[in-house]
Image: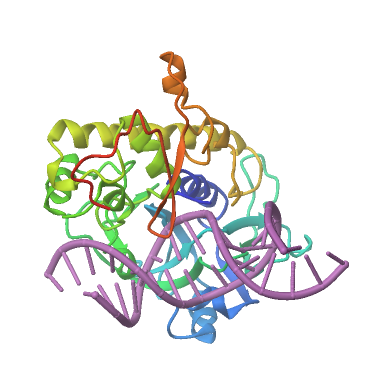
Length: 318
DNA sequence: GATTTAACCTGGACGC
DNA sequence: TGCGTCCAGGTTAAAT
């Protein structure tokens, strides 16, 4: 499922193939994918049609296309897209076969690539489980004056509906010191905090487990007991795993396809904890021990951990 | 106000 | 074969 690295791959694809083009037509095949656009389908179509995409920005797992003002004023609206668990954004020819779970089609103005070859004219939002969606949001100034997120020419603006989302680990404006202060104030467990998009964004269940394994923390470590070296270690681990995943996702950049393969994906072979229940912990094995990765129920989902590398703290907080 | 839980949603895996 | 149940999980509204 798409987490930060996967969404960043999508952002780069959109920045390359959609930025600068005008959305000439919109077709909504399933209104449920627009349920977060409270003003309804017709309003969405009316406001998107005719707008030009000036930039593509990402904060955590939230992605938005900045739309220009048809009257020539400053940009003030963003076309938001969240991929949820199974969302995909695909660039295709209009006559390409319709995907089974195609939800929204955007027809783009004609454009050429660097070699003068016409680019496909359709951006498709495909989503099997409908946890994702698209909606329009007003842009508002960022409180810190930094760019709203990661983008080519990202402005110090953020969509209202993403303003509560913290900056992610790949964002130059992310502050480790502020993160440390805020996580210490929480009265919860470490994994809950990592999954809280208001504290640090972009980390989902998979990379939370990977970062905890790499940094040797149990998911129930109370956040108010973390010292500076502890938060530094967890942030370093999370940044490292996501950076490597992003590099792995980057292999498909050359295809004319905004890569989101919603399923297990290209990084699966490098996972150390997630999905490896009953299999040996590779770090323990390299140190001559035989410990099996364990799956535990956590927040109505799963946590994978090595019981030796990540012992449960006595004051565990789930 | 802070924290936790339930609901949203589909399709594949599994047991009977 | 067919049916029912469980599981996957990002976000947010509702509950605690």
